[in-house]
Length: 150
Image 1: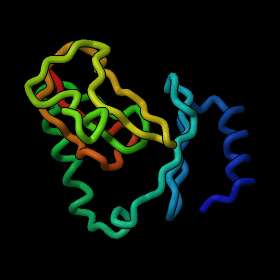
Image 2: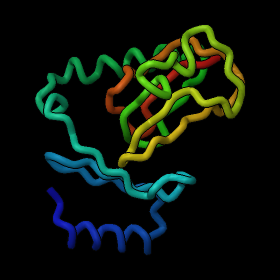
Image 3: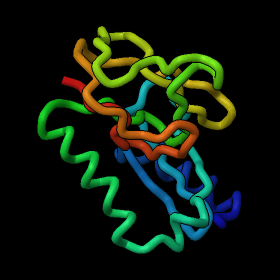
Image 4: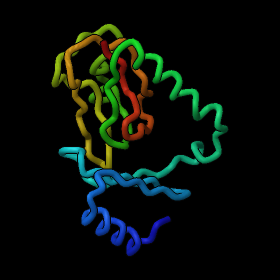
């Protein structure tokens, strides 16, 4: 784990630099600093799940292959932050979107909980959802495809 004083030094260096993105990782934490993301806290921290540390390389590459296929036939809506993906506003509610649903730019497609804050993720363009690429109530990474859209 990175001690607080070292972390403060990294933040100071990042703020004073011309870098736009910086990632720090160790055995238990993963941190990403991004000056280009609007409306998001510049530093998002997430604990690395124990299963991710011990998972074989084959299973770690499988989701990337599945996510790459829909991108060839259309575009994807990607996670703008690290957090927990929720397909619906509450456990009793229907999902915001499902396969076949047409969305317009600005429509809410899911929620990502990050640091106890619920962030509504919106479609960036009009289209039809062709695949849901994330599992409900599971951790998603920055840039991870959540939905395929065409």
